[in-house]
Length: 415
Image 1 (cartoon, rainbow, N blue to C red):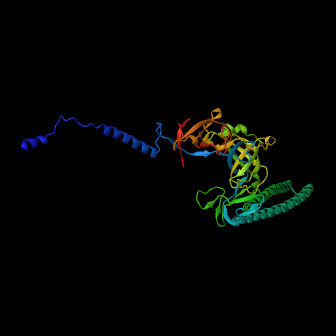
Image 2 (image 1 turned 30 degrees about the vertical axis):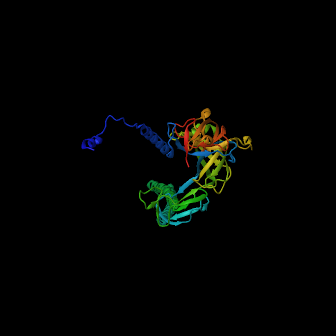
Image 3 (image 1 turned 60 degrees about the vertical axis):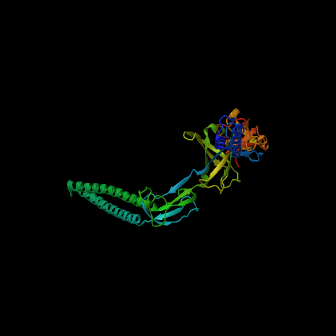
């Protein structure tokens, strides 16, 4: 074969028809779409146009809440003492002895502590000495008056017999009158001295600090050797009280009721109280009064509640939950109706109250549809609310529906 023929074989024939490439053109996009679909399914991306929302759910159970019948309102508050005092001295002094401890029961007038009384005792002795001196001076003036009266009587007799002058008679009369005035002054001085003694005795008595009323000591604030004053001295070395006493018979409950529900509360209304420390103990109580003033910042009204019986477990500042009841004659022993669900699960108010029910039977993979269902609600209890109609035990609802959730929305259930 000649060289020209070989060179011709090496040439590219540009007029030769090309083979079709359509299988690869179609296959690559299909493969890309399929891969994206697998990734989307793996990461939970929805094909419905909106990414599903992850929500937490609550399984509705039959209500077994005891004692809920007749409850018109629930509230929380604290135990407070209407009669409580921090006992201090009337004057500044050094504590000499403290006779009480926390938890001790004291009676009205019982000695709690004593202060250093050396100075007021010395002042009392000084006033007593002044009183004795005033009493002696009074006796001296009385003796002088007796002598002046005798002198006046003799001078009068002599003047009648013209043996004494008129001037002598006038002199004796004026002397008696002056002594009588001195006697009145001495009597006043004696009264002042007596009052000075009484005052010093009161100051000495103030060195003994006594209980103003009977109660229980809940705080001991001073120790022997410390300075105490009824007015703060501005430093950290002077106490302002010996102890704090609480009259346990004056304990009551104060709760803040939302002003939207204050119409359910009235004086004398029966109440059931449960201490946070003893949740199983139900203590009978009743409404004392509603404070006629609202808290603008919290939109609440304060209510005072009194215990019907004294309970040794109740102490000041304890947390307590109360349930306001209907009249006792209206409370029946019928089983509670409806179910209790989280308060956050119910949206809307009144006739527009609704929940979102999870339809697990219609789930497509991990995407579960929800149903917006209208419910009839009753009273609230703490963080729960009673649903009287529209739900039944065994159904699952969204416990805290997010914004934008609607009827037929698909969600992902949280683990």
